[in-house]
Image 1 (tube, one colour):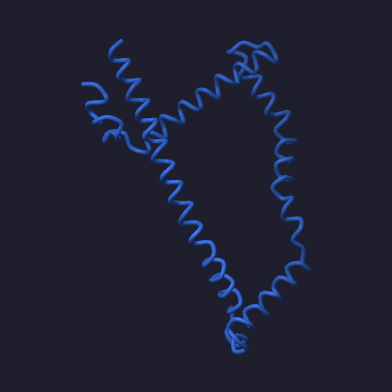
Image 2 (spheres, helix red, strand yellow):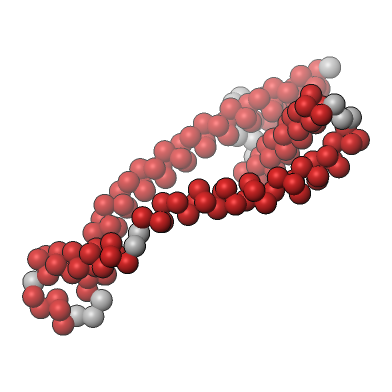
Length: 161
């Protein structure tokens, strides 16, 4: 019985779940990355496969700390703009906006400014997040169907051979 008769064509097979598909794809990606690492080390340093792991370990030890420091600087760079003065101005502006929206009685409600800011951000962000989530699900479904189709064709070809 070939893969097309089990799945009825290009549809999803009942035996392959998202977890198994992810593990299969991640193993394949790690295998390709490992092969590329061996090839790169062989071309640059001329080492064989049995020495590649030791060379990788030495390279990580020597280049790991500077790479981590550079990554830390890149991650923290946008936060350097936020200063105490900027935060204070933002808090004052937020308070004025909430009083303009809810009226002067909002001063008596503790945390009203934060609550209104959260509501405004949520009102703007939730529709965008829903659309993005739907598009991600559709893209994942298309990719999954393509992968399952390729795996089914590979299994069928392996059975014929």
